[in-house]
Image 1 (cartoon, rainbow, N blue to C red):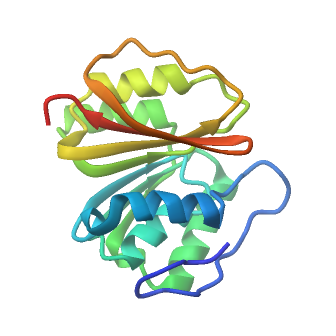
Image 2 (image 1 turned 90 degrees about the horizontal axis):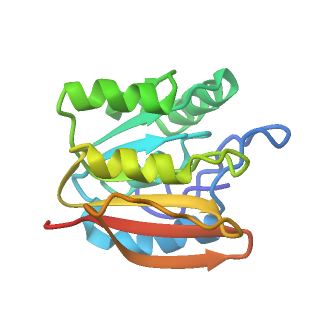
Length: 185
C-alpha cells in the first residue's frame, strides 16, 4: 500500500496485521482518484471507516485541504496516526474514534459539509443501504460533492433515498466502487 501521486508519492504506508482491516487496493485507489481528477484540489474530505487512512492520505497528497477520518477501531486509529505521522499530514486532519453513524448524527447537527465523502465499511457488515440512505438524507455534501462507496461486489445494494444519484459503478473482482452525486447539484 503506497501513496500513488502528489506530495507524498511513493511513500509506503503502514499496513494492518491480520484481516480485520482491509485497506483499499492501489488499483481501486487509482480509479477513484482518476475519476476525481482536479476536484480533489482544495477539497474537504470525510473518510468513513477510514481503516489505515489510505484514502485521506492520497487525497491530501493530491492537494485536498482537510480530511476528517472516522473509525471506531482502536487498531485502525493507531494505524491512521502512524501513517499521518509518516506522511507529515496530521496537521490537515482530524481523527475521530467513534461509530460512523453516531458521528454522522453529530456532523448533521453541526451542519458539516464536504466536497468528497469516502466510505469503505467492512464487507461483512450489512450496512450499505443504511449508509447510503444516511448520506442521502443528511446535508453532508457540498454542491457537486461526491459520495464514494467501496463495498463487496457480490452484495445487492438497495437504497430508498432519491436525493443521491448513482453516476458510476465499477467492479474490481470482489470489490465494487459506487460513485454518487447529490441530486440537484
